[in-house]
Length: 287
Length: 88
Length: 134
Image 1 (cartoon, rainbow over the protein chains, first blue to last red):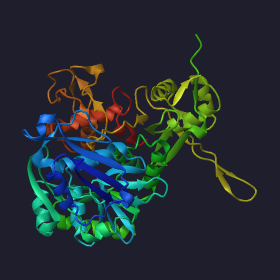
Image 2 (tube, rainbow over the protein chains, first blue to last red):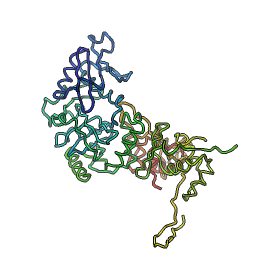
Image 3 (cartoon, chains in turn blue, orange, red):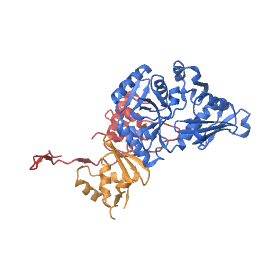
Image 4 (tube, each protein chain N blue to C red):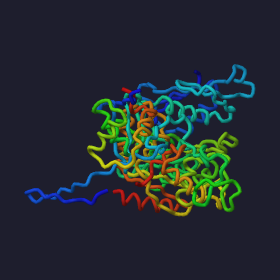
């Protein structure tokens, strides 16, 4: 494809190709400073193509193609090409990643140890991780946590953070404008704006971390810390993993080891300052 | 008609990990994972020794535990539906 | 269950002779929950189960305050639910709260109904069902 970009993100290399130039330019801007894959070898390919040939020019419409696809996915207007590229990369991971156990979780690192934030979509874990990334933690990822099947270590996978609706303004107050992609309104999930992790997160994307604490954060409730049973955590994490079943015994071993060795809690918080205080306290206790 | 006899797969085909009062089981022949409560692990252990019908299973369990209740057939049906035991 | 007896060996060690109790559970109780594969792009509902209230064995009944099915029109009874409860709703009810979509005045009756289910009636194959303390 004429327009294409190769990106190394943690241990995974992507090639994103497009018949249109604009999405690749936007992607290159968002991922400024990211390394290119060594020797140009990529693990996954995403291609942004017209849904039908004439839709390349007429009300341009982007269908997400690649090594792995969802056959019935609705195409996006060209103006949301950047979103299509991001969704395409998510899809390659969700359907094609076999080397690491994927958890739908955000993760941040401090002193070589990782805090994993998991829970239902919309509960605020991505935003919270992004905020922690601006408050002394290293952001390892906001969408996927990669668990090494053999070592049990978490690998960093610092994609651009996908901020939605209210979270956009929150992070715009914290972070310089050049780290943001364009604001996209009217997407299937409301308003979205992507934010690049900071320079430290990019520079250290090759560094893993030992999982040390697992939290289920929930924004918008009175401050509370509740224990969660290990079997329930195991169950929730399998539901939050797109490749647990495919990984068979190795996935089972990695996940049971994670669940049985690290402390966890459900945390509710009415505002971010409370949340950060709770996390600091629980992190100290977990040391 | 003789009562059905059941058997469980050998230990090396089943991984089991205890997590706060429950157990998680990976059943290699099916590739499926289950979360189970007592008396499932105990029943699986008892059925590994060889085929057993409900009455024989009850006898094997009674050798090691005080048994409350007697509806072992219901447990066997559940385990068979999950693929953790099969008819011998 | 008999009281434990102490059996002393010559070396002075104490060996209790009481054995562990194994509860086989009632006919339709549940002791196995199978992990179902997650869909590619969802991290949504985690408890794959539904609890019809009341269950098919008592279809059409209302739910008394103590959770037993009662005749329709019984004063103070909670109405049958049009949609089965999800596992998450069941857990909220068991904690003493009211989940969205449930009438707060009926919540206690439904919670008691679920607690009675744990003693072994049909339809309760949720993860939540494994949480019964014995």
